[in-house]
Length: 487
Image 1 (cartoon, one colour):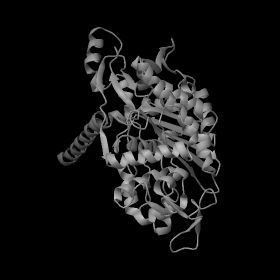
Image 2 (cartoon, rainbow, N blue to C red):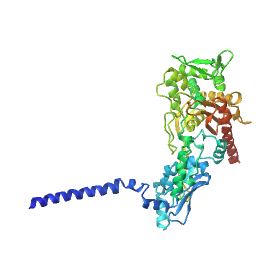
Image 3 (cartoon, one colour):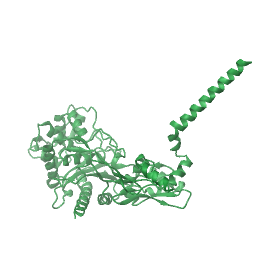
């Protein structure tokens, strides 16, 4: 009789231990998962009962919370929603959060450890807990100029302060209105989200940070840097620039975008080859340098690294082990070379910053509910990509591109602009990509910018015709803002 009782007792003891273990796992280890599930209505009501902090551009809120008088007490609203959507993202009761709304969620909802003192004060004062503020690095004038410049074109613009890595503009087209995803009407939210998802131009894609495309002739800036670093080439070194270049170990020929030789003699200086974007010269040069040298130089400028700004940017890539024909194509930004607009802005910024590549960042300060500064982002160096002397030499070559070459539409009276055009073939399934990258003023750059336009023409002229005028507007906006702040 005692043996069955002991067995039952043992089983009950095991079940009790299992129950205790399960409760411990749920309450201690898995509590955050259960709390953060989208279907958790209790957590949802708690989130919307708290005033979420603003996302600031200078002193103005690009995103803020307003009282509604409804069950969900606060609603997120966005000033100039489509303009700042690549930065703010959205905060939705159906689809969660994206952009800074997601990465800085604990600051904005007040749960961050940085806000512990503020929370304590609010609790003792009997006030509702309020979120902190996130101050961005965005320059409103530059953002507006980029947005207006893109207009109805499909593309992206990124502007960076070369000396710090501060992101001054991050713009995409088409964009979307986060206000329509942050309403309190689930049916309307779903309808708008499904419309955006079905759009073949992908307005929900954060093009400035994750849109990967062949960089075309803008990659010749990386090849030029590698050539200077080799010690075997200067701006005046003569390169072969024939009408066509036969790819090594192949019968295939690479043509210049003009359909002509790059000079009457068939030889052209590195400086002039960059100015007129001579494909055959750079294909030859790339093979002389070799894939390893090109990869190493590209990585010093940010390729093959994924940056968190704090939004995660896609990793721009140089192919792992290209053969000689593939290296030639890679040297003109084709084959499997892929870059974001952020990456190409970083390339320009590194050259302009005496060869130093800075880590890019989008958040300038974390502030308390009273806007007191709790944390400031300090500039940090990513890599020394070039010597100052080589960077100065390449800067002169880029100024020549604008003054005497393919980048004429970026000229600004009284300002030395360093730039480079680019056009990339993307295959039969997609139209070509037009690029322009630049920085200015050339001797002391305050802004580096990359413009990428999809559905462009097939000529190098499209980089100058479509992308360069947008870069010019952004540069002018930043320089105007600098002059205004000095008064």
